Image: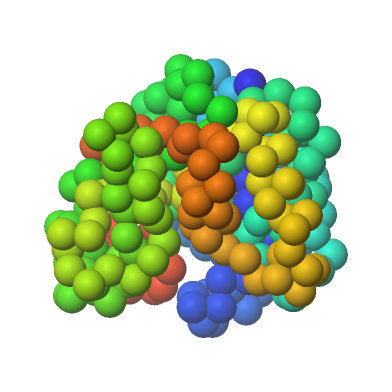
Length: 237
């Protein structure tokens, strides 16, 4: 199995921390976020790893990774960056990782063991972490609702209460060629300017609404985090 790390964006919410480097090169506990991701992927047994670059791509050239480049990184969103790696996505199952998160090999292994066409990991114990990060967890949290079968029913919308949230999406997921083909099909129905703006969670909701491919949700209770600000870095130290 292969893995793709999405590292095209600048991470503007990090302010001066990303003036001279991509977000994935910001350090957490003495090493860049990218090293945390690579360690987890390698420990899970994945050696074929690609990175989708954009902002400051030259600073990622010596990582020993296959590069897919998004030249329109400043005008497009995460799914457009992922589409730059379409040759891999069409070929075999791929683990997809955001570049501003950290997690353990166990999260990756749960996705590798899943046979679903499309699967995501989520944190069922999200509330404590989001409260630590934001004070009011609803300031940043998104809806995440499951069906009785353990598949996603809703993701990425604005919640009205914590009862709308059964977990938090982590930015770590798995596509098979069949799952990616459904995303391609849905994107083909949208004008280019809409494709440029669509977020990953909105894309997943589109897959849910289309009803052709269920998205399996895998609970993960290990250590992980999302780094969106300097305050997040302090919290995770």
